[in-house]
Amino acid sequence: MCGIAGIISKNISKVTVERLKLMTDSIAHRGPDGEGHWISENGMVGFGHRRLSIIDLSSFGAQPMHYANGRYTITFNGEIYNYLEIKKGLQAKGYTFNSNSDTEVLLALYDAKREKCLEDLDGMFSFAIYDEQVKSVFFARDRFGEKPLFYTYNGKDEFHFGSEMKELWAAGIPKDVNNKMLYNYLSYGLLENANDQSETFYEGIQKLEAAHYIILKLNDFSLIKKRYWDIDINNVDYNTDITKASEKFQSLFYDSVKKRLRSDVPVGSSLSGGLDSSLIVCVINDLLVNKSSPVKQKTFSARFPGFEKDEGKYMDLVNTKTKAESFFTFPNEIGLIEKIEKVAYHQEEPFGSASICVQFDVMKLAKDNGVIVLLDGQGADELLGGYHYYYNSYFEELKNKDKGMYERALADYNKLHALNAINKNVSPGFKKRIKNAFPFIIKPYFQYKNALKELINPSLNREFTNNFADKSYLGLNFDLYAKKSLNEALYYSTMTKGLSELLRYSDRNSMAHSREVRLPFLNHKLVEFLFTLPAEFKISKGWTKYIMRETFQHILPNEITWRKDKIGYEPPQKAWMDTALAKEMIQSKKELLVSKGVLNKRVLNQTPRAVSATDENDSSWRQWMAGSLFS
Image (tube, rainbow, N blue to C red; front, side, top):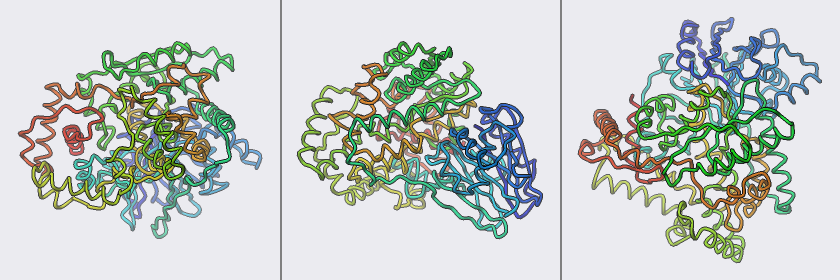
């Protein structure tokens, strides 16, 4: 796990170790264990690297790394979890290795298969490989976008890249806010452009999309970008049964966890108290017990005593069952104010709620206690229908397939969740039926509703609105209502909009503290398998994640297996934002946005509202986060 940097230019005076060092210095937090810089013989390609040593801690694992007598040079960020299996196969073909690192295995695999090497990788990664012989640079990003890769490309003679955008700014790339993205964030809360996933909140800076690669040819500076992997949502196996499916689920998940425990440094787990992170801790415990391992597992959690959504009792159940050594942090409103600028600095783009600041604290807790690698449960909700709004697509699918099944499923849901005080009822009432049936009407409705609101009571500067309101972006946050099947909705969250935001938060928060986060649910073979399962395996008898509960109930505490509520790692944000200091900081951000011509002056006379993490009208929080773009 590391940070990478690079400059590729026909003007070799721009490719210098000094500029590369400015880039890598800006991300020293991603790799405190070493740094390296390299420039090709022709002077056109320069790579930089910051190292966080995880596998092969020796100097043989240092980067940029060379292979095949210097033909290939790589700068690599990430982990290849199945590198031992790949290495064994390559050795059988005559390849030899000088290190025990996964980086050298990746280089050998690229030599053997070129871009098709990506098909073999189980891992999280972003990397660049320079081929001296053919004079090209190959860039790739993992299937789900766990590891970032940002770049600038002028289309003719210059290309910069890095793990974070602050590297590009350090190299002299202008830090100009993308006002189209800013408009849609302030108006609709959109953190990404689902129509163009390469777009960022800064002009001229793009991100390589998940499951894509780029080939840059130096002779003409042409760039080819291709998608190398996708999920087939129509490949559903209706002939399987729950017993067979559970057996395969367990086998794939255990294998994924086992590979993600490979490390030459201490490994622990983030534990929220929810089903996903609890399962990981319990599976790790099962693996350690079966190995008769004397190693004691460590868990890291955030608590909010007195808050109705504090999950301490569930954390205690898991820690007691697994005899884990538990560590807790207790974030509060004082800490929010103290750290929010630092979190914004590392995130670089706006984020959805104060829960991101809580995650930041958990990563610091792991650092303070000497654990470098953390396993986490992200991805399970998007793959197995964990959020309650997925019931809408599930009911819609059943209604179109079998009205009797639909009515029984709806009755099961209403019975199970009648007393659920945490999650709102999602039974398809009139409004939801309209949204499902007429998404082409609902989108324009919300667009015109917002336009009318701005006309009557404007919060945005009129000139800003007129210049940067891009109608093609509007209403994207309502796309889930248009999904006619559960698989469609899950795919949208996994591959288009939703999971990618969570992965960005996780990467930036962990790397801010030089920690590595590994996600067992995002093994691509497991993901492909879960998408083959019928909808009623994922949501059944009113339960979300039904097959997961059935499969692993033997190792989970019963109170967690059959929890009815869903809490999305939510802190008491509303209470935190109701403090005088928080309101003062929001006001200062409003003043900044007014001075930049973004907000209307009238907002300065409005008292900031205290909003929760789930508030759909959280203008105060958005203004706070939008102001950080200009800091």
